[in-house]
Amino acid sequence: MTSRSETMPFHEALRAAIAASGLSLDRIQDRLLRRGTPVASATLSSWQSGRYQPERQRSLAALTVLEDVLRLPPGALTGLLGPPRPRGRWLPPDTDRPGLAQAWSDHRDLTTAFAALDTRWDDSLTRLSCHNRVDVDADRSIRSMTSRRLLRAEADGADRWIALYRLDTPGPLPHFRVAAPARLGTLIELPAEGLVAAELLFDRRLTRGETVIVDYTVEHRDPHPYSQRAETTIHVPMREHLLEVRFAKGSLPRTCYSFRTAGLTPHPNTPRPREQRLRLDASGTVHAVALGAGPCRLGIRWVWG
Image 1 (cartoon, rainbow, N blue to C red):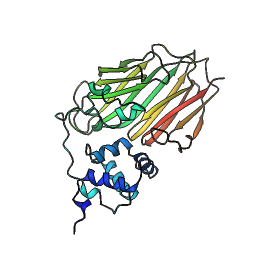
Image 2: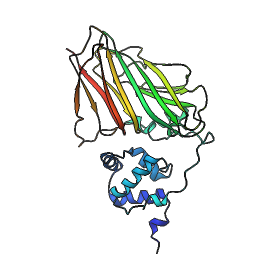
Image 3: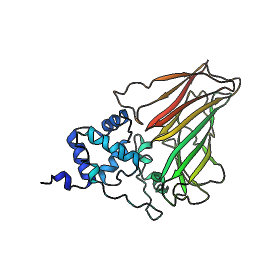
Image 4: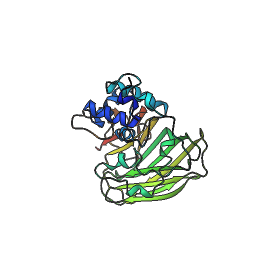
């Protein structure tokens, strides 16, 4: 006899299993992260709604662990997956893509605000590496952040990357400067959120398997003095993420520490992130590295003398 779950579509079976488990999406995300197969709660939500299904190798690997987390027999969910969905330039823009509006919203739904951005390619660009360098001026304020990313296209047609930047404290929004051959496309500024979102347009459409380097700088128009931390958000798995902070000569901090959170949003019972003391090099620079990191926040804080 065939059980009802075996006749369900994948997303309905997943939704029923999550409901039966009594676990929240955040709890499930935490358990997957602890087992080395990170999946964002927003992605889990999209799976159970039917908007997306696991297709990439890392997602399929996480799905087998998810079956165990939900106390399901092996193959109970993976056996319900249909064939991979087609990807290509004909797909409509998806402004509700997990990792953009949801990962950056915190307390307010930003889906409508992001509607002008073409986010259709976000899921088909694999993040191979990222190097963010923050420059701190002699007046102890963050002057700029330069980001250099290496991306790989997993489908034909990708022609842009969405960059987002958020201020720690209220103030004038920063200016985006994009290095050639890329150019700036649509720019969304949300002063109330302290958030800027920008389309960085490639010089041509990528073919599947092709890599591209995206290089841009965020320049503060009115830097706030006495900055004491720099933080970057990793909302999908990434092979290598390097965060570097460079201080002006003659204005060096007394101590510096790196930290990394477990997940994007702290929970009441989440322990305080472990910190590691960093040593300034001869050029007045410190850095922190995250290898194979899932959704998290990587940061460096410093204490002025």
